[in-house]
Length: 103
Image 1 (cartoon, helix red, strand yellow):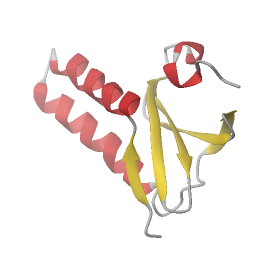
Image 2 (image 1 turned 90 degrees about the vertical axis):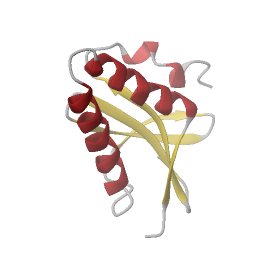
Image 3 (image 1 turned 180 degrees about the vertical axis):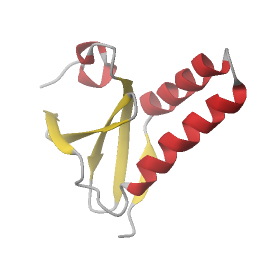
């Protein structure tokens, strides 16, 4: 499939936060972790519906998939995968900004 992966602003901030947290101990491992997350997300190009349906937000089907200590929330269109958030599993999902103002 020729799907393109798009990281929305919250997902970019999530990756930056993951990097910053791990980089307190090791920049090398912070880079490695972010690289692994991005690589996993890119693998969704082959099987975009691999994740399970999670929620409907403003008529958009949100899917979720677990990777290591993270839950990746994304949506799929005919041409792209929108990465909405990369959420650490120990945090409350209800506090995730992508679920604010759900219709």
